[in-house]
Image 1 (tube, rainbow, N blue to C red):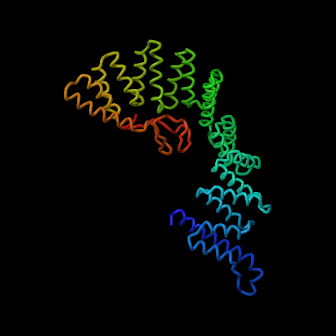
Image 2: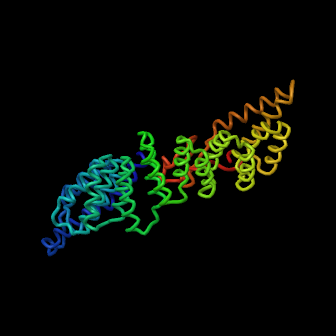
Image 3: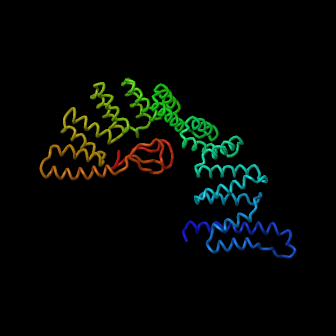
Length: 392
């Protein structure tokens, strides 16, 4: 028998016991004098299904036997949750809908059933129905934080950023949790949408709003820099790019290339090299070191570039750095030496091409592209460039 089915059988044993206890409680008053309790055929049939490893049939029997009242609500809630965890969301929905239809539930029991049903709808993709239930719970003042978190997830899935912003603010007030970093990202999403629609002025306002809410929002600075560049204000674009160092230096590899292009447009490459040397000294970024190596080769010659990158590798060895050093040395080598170096360079280049560039600091998700929201754990601002021998 599959492990999942075996697990379900073990979980059914307490449920069967609860059914038997409930029957005994209901019939004890009538038969206690005789000292014996009747055993219903349905109960025997359900136990046989359990023993014969037929959990689905056993479940149906026990559900029919066990009426919903104040003493069995928890059992039904647990069963519905079990169905959902097993991926049988339709069954979970039926169990929780059956609970809600009962007029004998207390307010606490009803709100818990509503929360579970809303979670069922979320799992099945019925977001509109889930949204309605979670809104109802918030209006009732029940399970407010849990409901707001679910609503926040719904609005993110639907790219409904305005409602996401409003819900995040309510959750921040309710839970006292700092949601500024997330709200800033929602404004960045809106800014990106307005940029795509050629509404540059609105996009600029939204990016500015993101920075007001979270001054550490790198994404807002990158959006601002791109909009300034498009408008022809290169000095302002440079200022926006350089701001990212103080916000989160982990994202500097995203900035260095575009920043170099902006300095070139102004004819100030020597000034950029001075700035880049400071970045290399402060943050030990191989992306910055490699770019500086190429600029040194361009301005002062390849011998100087080889000396620089060799020194950097002695301090912070990385595969990308070794690969670049080989490229420069190959240009001065010949014959068999060059061929051997080419073979090594091809191997390191292939290895680099197969490695992830980014990794989520929360769940370990690997990626070749930058995601502001991790596709795996769905956290914001946690996917960053890989560091160490194989990365930065």
